[in-house]
Every structure is written in structure tokens, then in C-alpha cells.
Image (cartoon, rainbow, N blue to C red; front, side, top):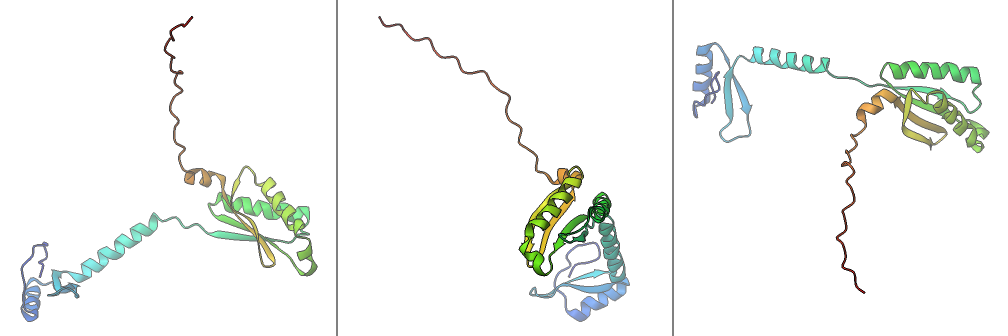
Length: 180
């Protein structure tokens, strides 16, 4: 048994341990039931639960949730519609979300996949300064998908390049003896 200050008290019978906890106005909480004998601690259980939830809420505040927003296209999407959807993608990227661009093929369009590839290339061209490709375009059934992330976020996740040592001068060769 462990008391409220964290000192070990020794091995006690359950009824005696409960009585000691009640005398102090605290609870007897079983910490590790699988140990032999089981380990119990005298504590204010309500206060303990309150502090746990408080820590979890504090940890949640510092958590950043990155959503993946999906924008769907067709291989025959018109230029105006394409630029409108790309503006939405820019907004999503500025908000810190990742964007999944999907080109959906229907019926005979599967025969002309290069149309979908052109749409993807156009999207990349329009977002070249603002986005970086995280997952390159690939076919998944009747859909071609690619995932983009903000360029500024990509710089944060980029591994640091090792610094190269400064250039040193070439070692001087020892003068060689002349043989005649």
C-alpha cells in the first residue's frame, strides 16, 4: 500500500487498508491488480480524475488537426470550372489542410486517361508556388488521385540537409628527387 504522499506503507489486509483510507477521508485505489500482492494507493480519486481530464484538455489545445479535403474533377472539366475549383484548393491549403484532387472517369473516358493526366498537370501548374505533391497521381479503379500539401508546410517537414565541410586546398605533393 502507498499513502497519499507517495511513501510505501507495506502490505496490509484489504479491510485494514480501507479503514486507513476512510480515516484520512480519502479513497483506496487499486493501482496494479496483477501484482502479487496487488498495489493500492490512498488518494482523492475525484481530484485525480479531474486532473486527468484537465491534462487531456490541455494536450488537445496544442494538437493540430490536418484534414484532407477532396476536390473532384472530370477529364472534360471546363477551364472556368477548373480555375474555380483550384481557387478553393488554394483556400484549403492556406487553412492548413491537405487536398486530394480526384479525376473521375465514366464509361468510355477510361480509354482516354491522358485527359485526366492533363487535368492533373493543369492543377499542378496553377498551384506550383502554393502546393507540393505529397502523393503523385495514380489510378485507383475509375479514379485518378493525387494528394497535395501546402508548400510552406512541406518546408517544415523537409529533413535538414547535412552541411558539407568547407573546401580544403589540395594536399601539396612532396618534391621528387631528380634522376638523370
